[in-house]
Image (cartoon, rainbow over all chains, first blue to last red; front, side):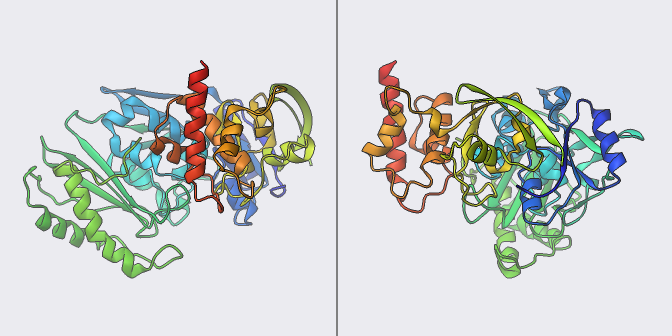
Length: 291
Length: 159
């Protein structure tokens, strides 16, 4: 047995947040359970009640169209995102990030909403969703609201959401067909490990817009401040990488943990910024290929 | 402690039970149904020894609540063998020497079964990716990959 808690399978979104509100902060939303159940077992979380939202049919949908972007229901497992043709074509950096989470078995349960709400500094789907300006759709007894992923993370393992709020979907705005996204991750073992460093970027050669985000290098995943000018596709990468690194070190605070030292993370940073720029500007492939 | 009534299909057989919220699907399979093929290794979704198919997809049963199994279809390694004998996949594991201590085998077989059902002709890279979440401390994996490759071919040849 994992501990002592009660379980309710909500049938509606309202039913879900009403239960959370009534429990007054002592309940937790059960999505894939791949973080929550591990934390309960390890004594790091002790909710009195688990509210399973997987019974709400509307949270199970993933829709994509080039004109409106993607709407990913909160209960959609990561493998569905990895395998979705629209996501792979238009947001390949997100598909790659989702693919690097855990193992195939874990990705059949784990959700993108859970990956975000767990608010790990190493959450793999966070950097691509940051650069894509993704928005969480959230419901509570006070109504519905939208929370940009950019204002979701407030500290390690802490989000700006209130205890009675339920994430219903993640919305990714449409991007021009010319937009490129990429995701790179350093981990010790594929299938069993969190990131030592993960980075994502978005670049449009037509407009020169460039945005990068970094994970596992601060208390939260972070966006790197913008360069403030368009980046041409033939921009010299070493110089661009140095400028972005100077901007990045204003927002990262690498720490030492069981996966790597702060010094190693700091040393990886310029390497991964350079590779990310090569992927975005020159379309070099530094990924572990999606099979 | 509230008990939750559940009804699910396990290896083709309908099962009904009342379970506490905190019981995992793995505990339900092992301690209520005595299907002890799926093993608890890490209990944290990392070793894959508890892998079963939930509605046809491999999951780690240590991270699924029994109550979440309500209305679902579960398959374990015990569902592989038929009255006529071991499955092609099980025999391939034996013939390729893919079993040493055997602790990872039920989970490996179910990850492989999940793979072969979505891809009857996997590449070695696809086999490796499918079992990336299953740890084996004995074989070095080569024989396991060979066994899955062999089973895939034999199952294709039978069709």
